Structure formats: C-alpha cells, structure tokens
Amino acid sequence: MIYAPADVPEDKSTLFLENLAAITRHKNRLFLFAADQKIEHLNQDFHGKDIHPDAANTEHLFRIAQQGDIGAFATQFGLIERYGRAYPSINYIVKLNSRTNLITSKHNDNIHIDHSDPISRELWSVQDVITLKQTSGLNIRGIGYTIYLGSEFESEMLTEAAQAVHQAHKNGLIAILWIYPRGAHIKNETDSELLAGAAGVANALGADVVKIRSPEMADPLIEEQLKVIKKAAGNTLVIAAGGDQIPQKKLLSIIEKQINNGNLDGVAIGRNIFQHSLPDAVALTKAIAAIVYNS
Image 1 (cartoon, rainbow, N blue to C red):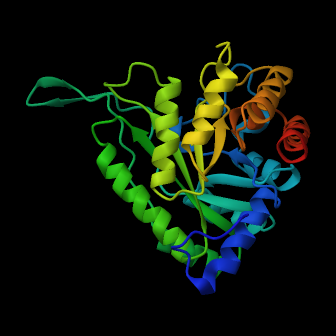
Image 2: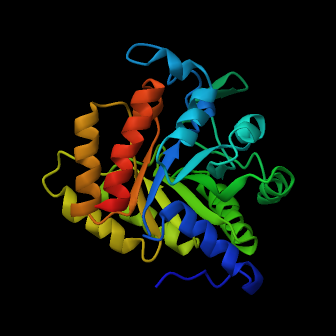
C-alpha cells in the first residue's frame, strides 16, 4: 500500500501522493534523469572525446527531459529557474546542494593539510523551491540532497538533509537523497555493507527515495548484495546511479539485472543519456523506461 509519510500534513497528503504517482507511474518505481553535473563535474561531462556536440548546450538536458520517457528530471534550482518556463511539462526534482570536484586540499599557515573529505552544503532552501513552484507553475515534484557518508563533515550534511526531507514533506513534496560513502576513512565506496548502511540512513532520515552507487556488477554475488541493500532501505525506494558512459546494450543489461534480479526500484541515469545526440538520448530513455516501468 502506498501512503503519505506521517509528517505530511493531512491537507498536503493528496498533493504528496499525486507527486509520487507522477514520477513512479503508480508502480513504486522511478527512472530519474539526473543532470546535476554542471556543478559537480564542471564542463568535463559536456565536452570531449566520445561526447556528442549536442551535450555542450545546457538546453540539451531540458530537451531530453521533455521529449524523452522519464519519471522525473533532477537538476539544480538555478538551471530550472533559467530554463523551466520553456519546458513546463517536465516533472522536476530540485537539487538543493552541490559541490565541484576541484577542492582536494587546503593550506593553513603555510602547512599543507589534507582536506580530501567532501562536504556539500545547502545552496537553496525548501522554501525557495516552494516559492519557485508557486510563482512559475512548474511541475516541481520534489527535492534532492547529497550526503557524503563517512566524511568528517557528515553531521552537517545529515542535519541539513533531515530538515530538508521534513520540510519537503510538510509541503507535499517528494524527498530524494543521494548518499555516497566517501572520505579519507572510506576504503571502498562500493562496499555492499556500506551501501546497505547508506540505504538504511536514508530510511532513518525519512527519505522517499535514495540514490546510491551499485556494488561492482562483476561481483558474482551482486544480486544478493542488491537484495540486502534493498531490505536495509525499508520502505524507502532504492535507485542505482548510472556512472560513466558505457555501451548502451551493456547499460540496459545492467539496469535489467539491478531491477529484476536485485529487486531495486529504479535507476538514476545522467551521462549515459545526455552525452549522446538528442535522437539517441530520447530513444535510450524509452528503452530504460520500458525496463523500469514495464518489466
């Protein structure tokens, strides 16, 4: 049975369920077109070898989201504010925080200090999202927030994420957490036990969906590991991140195994879609949607 979390006010429960149904198509599965890399990876994902020239144009992301077959499109508040009015039919998930991949160390009083542990603070608030939704009339369905679990700064991100989830629910919005084990204390970011822990953290924070990296697909125990991760998430939906561009047949095979054999609830794909031409990207979204929503 699908129901609104207990912190969703009664007068917002219908809206919450409408937003959930819009992105999951009443099937409790989600195909998220994730495109927050403009900040996260700067321009390296949009120009270069094996990247179609279409990707250099920011509007390419919105064209794919509008013409493709996706559940929702996740990107930063600023990009939605810049392009959203031209693409009003898209279901939007607004990312509240982001960081670049540039800062790896700092200096203090001429002494080098390792600063490899990541932190990503809130850039926009849930109230900013509510205001944008009200003034623009866009189909803003929810918010997203990234946590780097195991970072020395995890407590700050956990606190912001917890409040963002609660505020989103109070306003009838879906809350999606990106949770990645990462930092100096993390030896293996795709360790299945750590990923199960991340999924459990998302559940404890009240998230409706958690986006995680998958354990290595070459591991012969991958399907059982995915099932453990799914159980750890409780009634929070688990979707797997797509990662770097790989051949399309391999991508579709991985997605099929993650969902049909590993019991995951969907996928979040970005570079494997938008680094292709518009026609190819749109066609790929339809192939992915067929697996997520119809298999």
